[in-house]
Length: 194
Image (cartoon, rainbow, N blue to C red; front, side, top):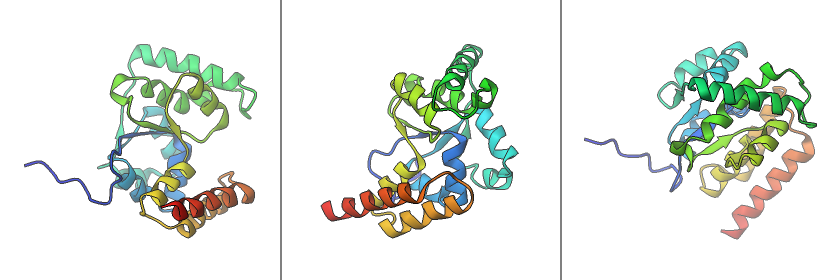
């Protein structure tokens, strides 16, 4: 017998490919369960898994194992990811010129190019990596975009969105006060339109 899908999931929700940054934001703000209401599963690369563990989120990753899947890259995808990581490291928006430090973003960008992920969303917050992914025609969202989807789907309120982003900021995520206000205003306007 097939499992029934949770009724709180947004209609048409697909898988998300997640980079480390948005997943850390979700964990910092205690929003990982919300991700799984918006997306059926979150898929990550081996490099992203290693980064999450290196940042101290191993227990949370284990707890999320039923909806967080590690997807291995093929040898040819690994070569392509190295080339993408070099492009990210050379991009003017990056603060880190070491290509190896961009392997997590690069692997999920390359995974997003697979046919099986053509209807999925890549969760990516880092500006240089986003610019490269856009050039490669990858469908993107950041963690704030996921929260906006959750507001649109009546899973959270605009005020809850603001609280979650502020929690991330308190934990060191680089969301400015002005950015949080902008996203909050978008969420409030979204609710008025409905």
